[in-house]
Amino acid sequence: MKRTQWVGQVCFVVLGFVLFGAIGLKAEQKQSKVPVASESLQKQNDELFKTLQTVHGYSDDQMAAIRKIFATSGFVGQGNPSVTKHPATPGECREKLSKASISYDNADFEKICGAKYMAPIYNTTRDPKETMSQAKVCIDQFEFPNIPCEYPVVWVRAKETVEICEALGKRLCDAHEWEGACAGSLEDPDYQFEFAKNLSPNAAVEKLRLIHNRARADKKVWAYGPTYKTGICGGASTKDKACNGGNWKTCGSNTYPTGYFPDCHSPLYVYDQHGNAAEHMNLPLKESQMASFGSKGNREYGYTEMKGSWFIFDHFKAHEDFCRWRAPYWHGSRVMDPQSHHNYHLGFRCCKDVKTP
View (tube, rainbow, N blue to C red):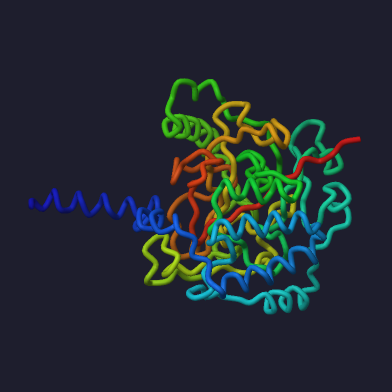
């Protein structure tokens, strides 16, 4: 083989790994067809269900729906207990927050959102400026299970996130809602659907993301401020050496407890949107696919969008993660595809439409 050919092939492989983290993806997809829930995962999930119902007060029917989704998956939970090595425990998280006199309870937010640990998101730059009492939507302050000092739920498919959110009276967020929650102002939807007509989903996502990202190239912000920094959010954990890109048996979900980094929040007090777990969101390619457009029962949902970054991002900045950045069509599918992507560092959070008088 000629040296130029060899170098080209090596560069191609490296580029693919950096951009997609997809080495071993085919193996992960093949093995993920068979539920692999273990006794230790079930025990971990049972503890999670108890905490979820205690903190949020969900009904027995709601909890039964959640248990069914977890059981059907066989993967959904806080990571494979056999290989996961968290850098901090829930107890250490609670102790850290207690010493700093930090509480995430917010009676004003709870009154507006009608639920615990949700933040109103609204347009703070419009003239006249909106206030949180005018918010029409709220978002979970933390990654699901949306409880401070609990590990985020991962190994969840986009379709399963929709089912979980809706079982709890919520919904999956649209991309622009997540972005607004991060940047500190919920802008009007900017999907420019006219440019997606007659294109394949891959081509449409790529065209719309380029338009969107170019318009924000000089306006980058992160939840914590206008300059990218390390050490603010949960990005200093480690990836297992044996992890080949997405294998249940070798890839630990080495996340931090949510809220462990109290400075990792947006101006609207939404936490952990950088680092820890990346998050499923809904990316519509036409108006009817907007989660914020329909109501439960007639939401069409669009395509998968993975937001934020994950728990090794301080060491390995593989892509942009400023608030309003939109990603390529990575592991793309319809949100409601039964085989939509899941992996060890991909979680989610929910949105909730605010009931107006």
